Length: 543
Ligand SMILES: [Zn+2]
Image (tube, rainbow, N blue to C red; front, top):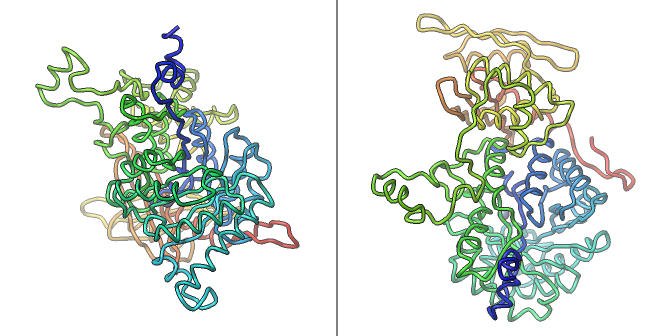
């Protein structure tokens, strides 16, 4: 009886007379906040694939994007909401156009949620609402924001029942005022109230006290779930999240690998495994299938191009590596000497599986499925051809190579400009020269150019072919898999006025990777300048 009940988690504790464990909802924002990481940009297909993996991981809520911000964001939220059984959230500022657009994206989903927000700290109020139309004094501006928050939630409620409200920069907001904003949002119908430490400024004891204070002071707080959303600017996002949970939060917003704006968000795997490994000390549990953590981490890293630091807790390359002789000796005698959790428990496989030219289509497909990728029938041949091409160059194809392959080529949409051909001449005694052929629709452009090096020459040739020279903001290249024939990844950022755009290219040839990345950034810029979401006679149109 006891053994059977143990599997049920909280029931056993109740029967033993202990305090009943409480369920913490995991709100994953990898696809929204995570995608705001510098250098990360995901296409619609990659987002769909990550959403499927998040569902497998069994998160409770997936924040799929910020629909009004671009047609790409809109489409991703819409397609994820259409196919997922999970609660899918779309972000919206406290503006009618944002809320309406979020609803349009979510409307056919099974469990849609509108997530709207207002800024509440004095820093944000004086910065974002400086205009006198919001009030002449801080006090007047503050009451305008309470009204805006109330109106935004009320408006969202005309579309959907599940509405979440966030008080942006709550970490630096005066708690008394914050309580007034929250009360108004709940009165308007918000079912979840999120308290973000947007700037990652608070300390765990302060953040915990803030949540406790909200619980105590907001009269109608029991009508809503308290959520937290912590940033990692001081490396305290996970600690602050745990302090928030300890003081009454029952939803935690986090991302895979802790990616996100600046130093990132609280890391999902660290919060979940802390509650899991230290269940003796924590009275909470989550619904996460922890053996999917490693695959989720690798997939997000592969698609976003953001490498996981080797010493990252839970999912880093070295998280379970024991280097010193004393540690190794101890581990051989008894694993628990230096290990508080099994690598297998989070899905790290003991043996590395290597595929090669002779692995066959079936072997490749089943390996990709084990890694969490869903391979549509019509893509199998394309994946297999790319795999053979890679196996010819590399001989041994590792899991990480497959992840890059899935991210780089398979889900790429047809771009406006595509690199059809690249030829480079370079050497110690020659002037580097590049020739490119670029296709757009049924036209092709061909140009050659010299440069200070082969990368410069290829960028010059692309600029000549397109008759356009964007301002280069940054250029990085690095190897993303192991070995001499490793895949090289190039990330290029270009600037156009206020906006910057990034492109990513992967290849065993770093010059080719660089040229692809440059062209992808240019494609992003064109897409941005030539499309917009507008309402025409109440219908949403993508222009
Ligand atoms: Zn955030």
